[in-house]
Image (cartoon, rainbow, N blue to C red; front, side, top):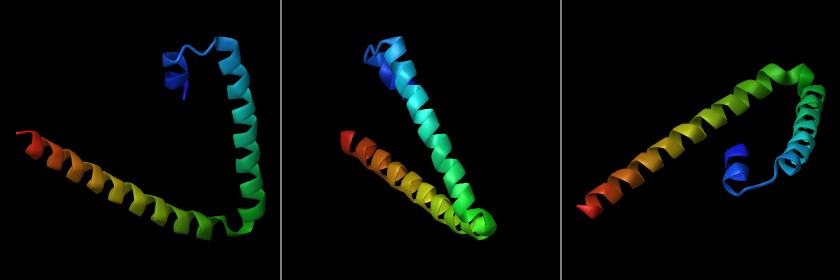
Length: 75
């Protein structure tokens, strides 16, 4: 998000304030998830890891197909 904020001319201190708030929220979320899923973290990571990997691979294939289709269409 820092690139987008910089491209839009967001003042540094405004960005810094929002970045601090987001960092605190993210840390709280991660710590809370660790507390809730702590005992089952191995099962959760295995399950989520599989879903995330499948999603990333699927998106990569879709992007590749769209780029390929657009290149053929523009020729």
